[in-house]
Length: 196
Image 1 (tube, rainbow, N blue to C red):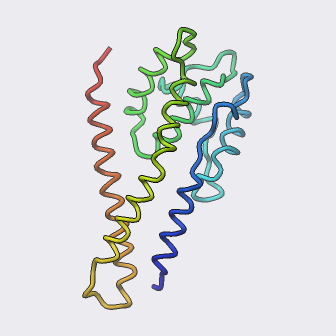
Image 2: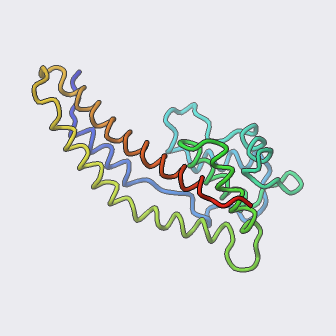
Image 3: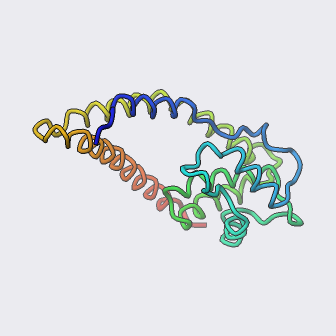
């Protein structure tokens, strides 16, 4: 296995530098039917697909989210801008949290802020949260570079033909440990929410 580890890291850092999010101003200000929602989400989040055939969102997913109280029910089969924003949160969370945890997190959020005309609403929350996350890109890039360099120093005594794979494996393990620990922390925070 011959892998240019430095090129791989540069490719990863380059892709991270292009991470973007759906801006609220890009979401139509009119209510959308389900097909329009799935088409919009697919076009906006296409770059996050691992494989071209992957689905960002399906009708079944949306129906299940509403049925399980992750998403407020549509109004006359139409979804508002706030629905779309909640769906974006669901999309990001579902990669590492259980549906039950997402429900615990979003039910409190939507109960208080969905269609709230007194101050803070879902769009305000979304703007605040995603503005913070964009600022984390430099920190994330530095952290990835540090983990990569650490992994490249592993297995110095391994056979030369095995070193690239073993170092990639080390890099993946370091990243996985980070995800594992952060997931545990997130779950602990969710579990600490007071019950209503």
